[in-house]
Image (cartoon, rainbow, N blue to C red; front, side, top):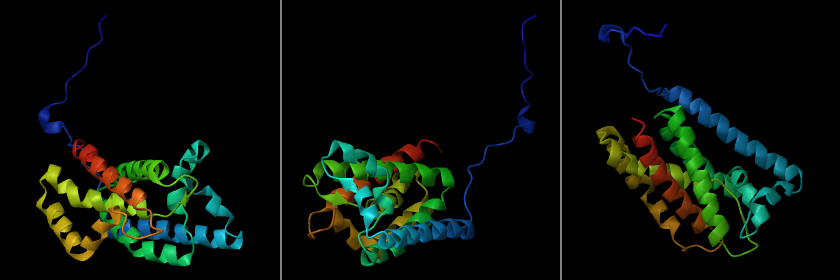
Length: 201
């Protein structure tokens, strides 16, 4: 006997809603993530900076795996402090659009940023820090409105340009010792993530 099914009447169909985080929930999540970064740096200091060897080793095939660990490491407290506020703010804003979008944007930004840092940084150099991921979140927030046509996201992008517009120059080799390669890769990853997540609306 052939199988059959009964279609659900239109009146009984329940629309699938995209999960959006509350401001408090997103803040708690990003606060926890920031605390984790500080705990990792504390452990690094106690270990005599041994965790720094988990940073990306440029152009070393064995160093490719550290693309996944480098964003959570920092070369000293000042490095971490400079990243802490934008890490929380941008991560919180991305999280507000939904946890899945945060995960997708974070993953793409980390991978693309890491690949750029690995391939374009002078051989043998170590690259670490959350700034590549931060640039990914920043770019995502700036361009997502181009595809979603959401006026609220466009307003957020305008506000970010006003407050953090100077960051854009970080994708250029303007400051010695700062990985513009990771910044550029992260920004490109953020644009890719914005396009990918826009298709999921």
